[in-house]
Each structure stands twice: as C-alpha cells, then as structure tokens.
Amino acid sequence: MKKVFVGVSGGVDSSVSAALLKDQGYDVTGVFIKVWQPDFIECNWKDEMRDAMRVCAKLEIPFLLCDLEKEYKEGVVNYMIDEYKAGRTPNPDVMCNKEIKFKAFLNFALEKGADFIATGHYAQKKELDDSFGLFESGDKEKDQTYFIWNLNQEILKNVLFPIGHLKKEEVRKMAEKKKLLTSNKKDSQGLCFIGHVDMKDFLKKFIDTKKGKVLNEKGDVIGEHDGAVLYTIGERHHFELFQKNPNQKNLYVISKDLENNTITLSEKKITQDSKKIKIDKVNLIREISEKDEIEARIRYRQPLQEGKIIKINKESVEIEFKDPQESITSGQSLVIYKNSECLGGGVIV
Image 1: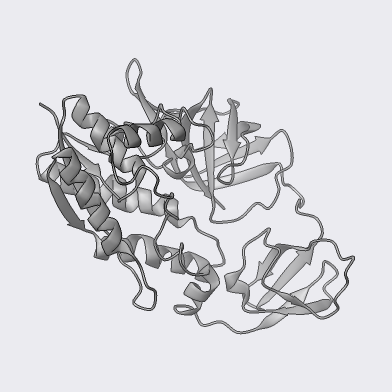
Image 2: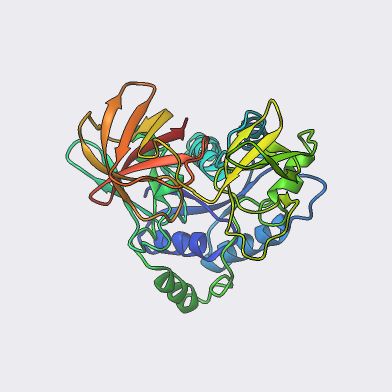
C-alpha cells in the first residue's frame, strides 16, 4: 500500500483530497504545515490546525504537525522583503509553493517513509510517454498552475493532486456527503498575514520608507506617496494627488525610481515594448524551443495570451506576445502554456 502525506490546511480542498486518497486505497497521513507569522498580527493558525485535526479524526487517519517556521521566514518572507527593497514586486505564493510545499514538506514526507505528498491544488498531473506533464485544472476558474510553475520531473513523480480534475462545487458536495466540517468553510486568503493586513503596512515593519514625489509623464510633481519601494507597476491607489479633479481618469503607476524615491503615473497602462517580455530564474517542466508558438499569462486569472518564444537559454527566455500587455511588473511570474499544459515559467525581469 502506497503511503501518502497530505498537506491538510483546515480547508475543504485538502480535506477532500485526503478523503479521496483514502477511498482509493492509499495509506494516508494528514500533515498540518506550521509557517512563520509576525508577532504584530493575530493569525488563526491554531484554529485551522484544529479543523485539520478534526478532519483527520473523522477520516480515521493519522495526523502530524510539520513545523516549517524557519524555512518559511527565510525562503518566503525574507525573499519577499528583499525583492521589494530591490524595486521588484514578488509573488510570495509562488515562492511558498516552491520552498515550502514542494521542497521542505516533500523532504519531510520522504524522510518519514512516504511515497507521495498530496495537496489540494487545482491542477492535474498526467503521465506522458517519457515524463510527467502539469495540466490546468478541470475547474478553469480555480486553476492554480500559475502558482506551481517551479515544479520539475523529480518533484512531480512524488506529487498527487487528488481534486485537480474536479470543479469546486463538486469538491464541496463531496465534503458534505462525507460530513466533513470544512464543507461550507470559506476559501483561505493564501499566506496568513497577507489575508489579514495591508501589504504596505506589513512591509513598513521591515523596510524604512519615507514620503516622496508623485510625477506625471512630463516629470511634473503632481502628488505625494508613502515610499516608492511600496508600489507596484499598474497600481492606481494609495498615493495622494495635490489637485482633486472629479473628472480625472484613473492614473496608474508606470515606473518608479528608488534612488530618487519617485513614482510616475499615467492614464495608460501599456508602455513601449509591451509585446516583448524577458524572464529569468526559468524553470521548464517540459522542453520548449525558439520559435515555438505558446500561450502565457503574466498574472493570476489573466486570460491566456498568444505569443511565441524568440530567445531561450539556460538562464532566460524572451517571449513576444501577439498583443501588447498591460502593467508588466518586474518580479512577478510569467507562466507558459500549450494546449492546457503548463510548460514552466520564470520571473519577469
């Protein structure tokens, strides 16, 4: 009997994942992953852990606690803070999956004799002729392949996505049928502290900031902001304009200058060369080549955009899109697809 450690978070998706695997005959253990949280924010991780324990008790499977506070602080939080300091806008959910769920948790499970780990991600693993492929979920609205482009063949062989072929409403119905307490529970907000505090308030605890000038495209000073390091490209809030105009169209951050502590606004979200995007820190789940026609997205839930590979090497990939892209943000993930298969991705330069 194959042994599976399921990451149980106290939510409905991981609860049903554990239930399905048990029904399929696996030797299932539920594992709650404890991550770092700041002491200045109230977080309900203990409540979530209790719910996870109750689910495991209902399913009559063992429960374990996996303490990854140190790994989370170093691999996710410190990374996020360093990226903001460098003027980029990171995606901590991508890094959490890479460093915690599919690295530290996977190592924890394998060391304890598990054959697989399983998560409640909406994604599908399919066995192909000579490799594994990562495919979009059966529920396109909930698909999470955007956040797990860092997986590789070595990881995929040890990973299961039990609910990846299902729609969310089917998952909830299964939870109701099995009388799991999580059946009507709201979806989590991702990283604990992000769900309970404004990102700018959080960053101010770790980064020294000071007010600076807001500029228009001509370089005129039109307002004031809380610190250029806190803003992301495409943002249209959290700065103050000196002249209030009720007819003013939305203004978006199109650039920021950390050295001079300024941000520049425009009514246009599209800038020059917005068809070509370069990514580094590239991970390819399966091979791609120059001139390949692909699809990609540069933010979660963005409809897939047509494009082609124009340059590729071990460190970076350059993609030319058919249509100009809005609010291209350094530090965010660009994820590559073809025929519903996630081929990998990288970080926007």
